Image 1: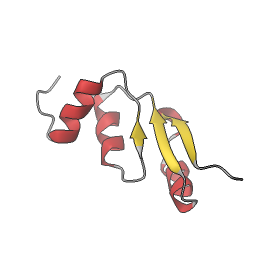
Image 2: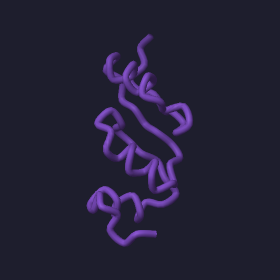
Image 3: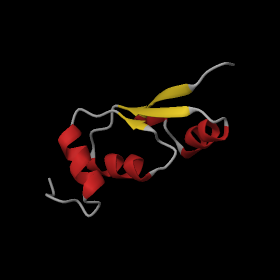
Length: 72
């Protein structure tokens, strides 16, 4: 289809969607993720290339300290 990537809302970013995008070699962006549990899950998923959030500082803390860092 000529696409280079997909932008998927977090509620639609299920394993099958991420798997098919990865299988097709597509760049994957998931948006807008603000919940700690969801942030951790998408940060840990190698199929997600970009994560959009309204809480960038928290996302960086969770990325750098997977145990939760300064738990909020």
